[in-house]
Length: 297
Image (cartoon, rainbow, N blue to C red; front, top):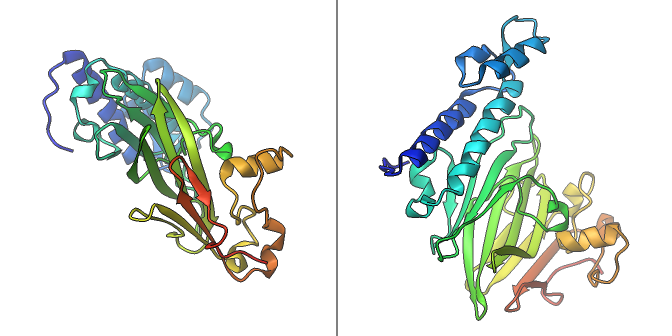
């Protein structure tokens, strides 16, 4: 993070305080015990934590519980920062102590920090910040609601943002991954665009596997998304190993067949030695290339 002078006193105060909480969050280990009085919490919050505490180490709070209070403060401050009227003057990666990924046109920002829940699932808290270019901003505090239908940003954040120009404007291709368990990696890719102050989700695909990641790749030159599956290695634990996108899976689950004009092959995976789904960009979204994809007969 660069040293940047924030000229607005109120924004500078918000950023400084948010970074304090983000730094505290990074330092708290989920299963260690801490004295809540050592952290930037209100007196009532400290009293509430200690009053309802069943920790054998009296006066101490387990980190996973303490973090919920620290993160609530951080999230509240981040909401104020991202909506501040002067925020468009600043590169968020220069002023915030958290992971920030920025599109090459400097309009879309994906922010995240570790949730530190203590489980093998290494989840994140994430925010999306978009600057249309007219002085306004669009913000999302991503909570994960609707993600299974491909109608929200993935809550674990993103590590890369690609851009696809179209006659109707720019579309953004977001990719990320997360450690889901000791041996499994979750990967996800989403295509979105912004229009009239709203976000639209054009494509969404996710997969969880024990193959170490790298199953979703994007060929920028040919605008192709390739998903490699290993049904023999994963079908004992994952039922989403097919060429259906997230919103179509939701439609199939709810018996909505109107938009489910796809290949539903989940039941045939036991006989499949390999599976490859190739999606091509048709100028609007990514569509399954049935001829080049490798699927069970």
